[in-house]
Amino acid sequence: MSTTAARPAGFSAAYAELRAAQKSSVGAPAYSLYVNRPLGRVFAAAGFQLGATPNQVTAVSAVFTFVGIALVPLLAPTWWLGLLVAVLLVIGYALDSADGQLSRLRGGGSMAGEWLDHMFDSAKNIAVHLAVLVAAYRFFSLPDRLWLLVPLGFAVVSVVLFFGMLLNDQLARVHRARHRLAAPSREGRTPLRTLMKVPTDYGFLALSFVLLGLPLVFFGLYALLALGSAGYLLIVLRKWFRDVQALDRFDQNEREATR
Image 1: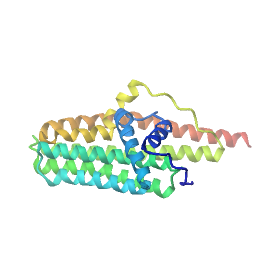
Image 2: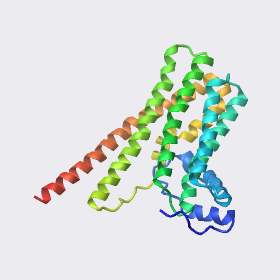
Image 3: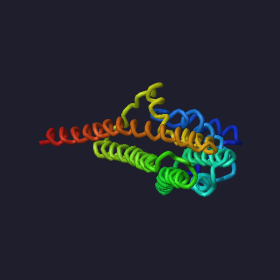
Image 4: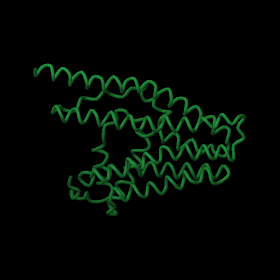
């Protein structure tokens, strides 16, 4: 798609155009919707005025994110380290939102840019939990080493959630393209759905590192997020499987109708 759309005149115009062209809020967790996207909009408008490309914004996001993640297992937990890590992760996450918004402002993205963004997200989703695992082993006075299974389990849950979301979306896209179907109308978000997704919200996880200077308090909150994410995964896996089964039934009905 073209990326040579006319530039809005000034930061305010770019920001306003982004605000009017936001993607659907359906399915977005609370932090991502109310904090991360607006903050990313600021970065995207600024990047647009500076002539930055979406891939450059993704690269800067990766620097902030992985520096923040690397600090967790390398340095003993203190209040200032927790604050620094949280700030780095929050900025990195906002820039991760900004690259997609900047792409829309420039007139459209590219497959290479989407690939780069998803690869970065994949690495981030596993690295943050491995960092907590190493930090817990080195610095936390856990009552039992079995608690180290928490970040390992959280890492598995995060990977499955991320992959399942992408896979189901891709299967649905292929199905619609094959049968030349329009995209279905989306259900509106509800307070219950938003609340259920809080444990899976990367932004909330990033903010939780503010408590890193209190290792057991941080780890307690982290364990609750892990438990909530696992519970949400069990619920959504059933829905995802039923959605794919519905695609199979549609294909079967189409084959029978053409016999």
